[in-house]
Length: 311
Image 1 (cartoon, rainbow, N blue to C red):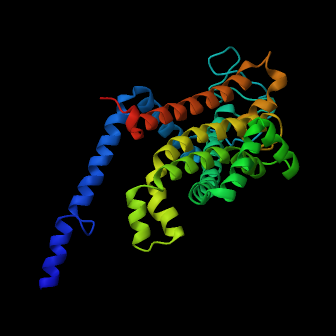
Image 2: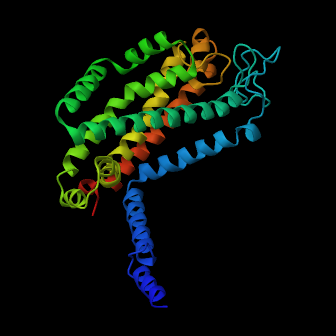
Image 3: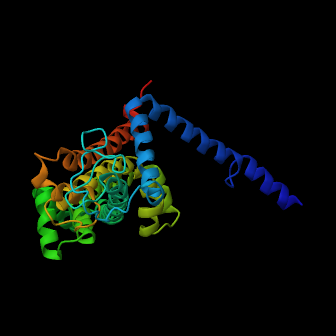
């Protein structure tokens, strides 16, 4: 009975993750949302991004046609509101009779998939390497950072093109190349954050308590370095979509008939002057998606960085 009473007392004061800890987390979330919503552009970007996610998830339900189906006699049909258009193809068709609206809807899936995979790879590898460089310093730090400097010395798209040329054209190889190009940003951010945290009192206390290097790096220090990494991950998400579209446009990313926005632009190059809709709508999809994500990134920066929080 006494043990039970002690546990209840500990929970009440938050020592066992009880109500006090939950209230603290709710307060932190409330504070985050308060500062995030002060940036109206960020809120708009969030809603647009959620809409794109919903469209991607519901693509099989809301897409009016099969995105790869070619319809004879429906080549380069203009949008429904133009002369010669049809409401069967609201945004028109491409040069082989595929519905552009359906391809845009399914293209959202590919773009979000690319962003998630690329950012996950870049974050996981970049954070691990950055923590090692910032914690151990010395020769390990020098070797890692000089390698990152070499990667950053190349234009990102050019380096991605070279890597895809070596690995071979394809969506998966393009994602690996883009992740490698984006990785140095996470390495440098993580290294700087770890260097700032490793000499603080709580880290020293953990060392005195007998914590090993692995625990100190990933359990003690890393959780306090996440704010800038979250912002960088958001901005890298949009960069990944842009780079994948660029590689697709150059024929080195997703291959036809994949309904990826960059590939759609590549297939429409020769019809720019006589079929504007074939180029315009995929370009607008890329623009809106990247802009929404960048606006979200600005809001996250305002909400997570104490120096930028508005009064």
